[in-house]
Image (tube, rainbow, N blue to C red; front, side, top):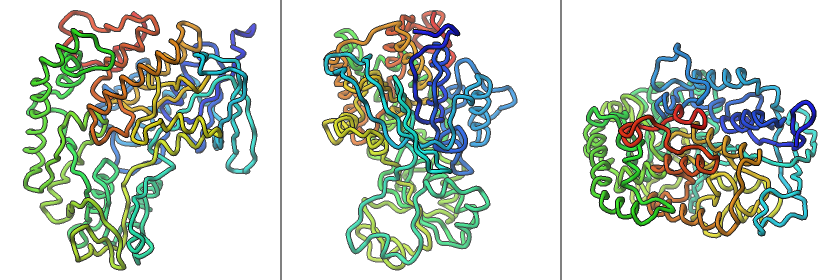
Length: 516
């Protein structure tokens, strides 16, 4: 229902002013809503607003852009740096006049639902209200907003750091030096970060993107005189570039044909048989990429060959690019790689499992990720909703229908928590799907049917991600996932012109500019 000026009476609260929050705001406006965006910081951009100085975009630029707001011609890098990405996001917000909807320095403390609607009957579109308790951080004043819908866009890579557990006598307190999480390091500006590590023996724990970037920055500052030690629990297929043996990786994994080789949730008998027949090809793709990475980065020389496949890595959304010259610095002695399944602290530094001598350190930086599910579930006051978000299985990913809504939590969506190989445009199509749902363009199936669909995707995640199953990630099936969203919205899921392009050309943001 709309007012006489075209605005709708229903109120939407959006939690978070990162990319997903901005997209949710933009598409809510397109349907006549007047959304309120609560952003705990003083600026937009989410993780891009405060990150490690040397961080660059992990996804090639053509795959990381808004469908109706392409990168400006002035940005020529394939992997723009943090400042350029943030400028692009800010330009998008200005272009679509989103900033006026954002309440900065407003932290959402809790969400509570009140109403007589019972979501177990299938009424996600119920008649209840959400109470959003918000704190204005400069004044500490608290206000409660009552809204019709909530869209949670808090992401998973901030606020609640994942700190490893240590034996009682080997905790950080035993260490005479300083221990911080990468989250704290990323908040520093370039000069502060340089001064912080300068002249210190630094140990970085973790081998994903933040760990790699911090190690490179430390080795730049301290050189060979004080080499940076990287503690690695699990080697990963981090890529030097996206052209294995000169062939575009996008043509191996980002087209419809590549997805024919993968068993998909909800597939029929024909697709099941095709995926089974093509499984050797799926294995071959993985070995092709692995052979290039091993050769290019000399992984065997450094004892860094992973024991899982590249496809497992891709399916779990764990692909990172290796900073240029990383392994050259290992060979020069500016970086030292140490593998260990576990470690602890002593007075002098870090002691690795199976080694008596500690790694002498002045500073230890834990690039050990974040507890995304803990961050997400604790925003809810209701223990029931907390449990629904966490899932019945402690090893499960967040159980969301279409990776957007929980069938038993009415009038609430979660966008940007479930990852893909290109998060921006996946969040965009999900926000469009949500806007169409709120606009009444389609109806949800019953709770039973939604839970069945979630279970099918859960099986896929367990099968494809294996030990990394905990992450909410659609991985190597982003086209199949988008097809479901398109069908719900009444869009043609086939977005290309011509049979060859439809099956063999990579899919990207510009394929989803609108219904066709």
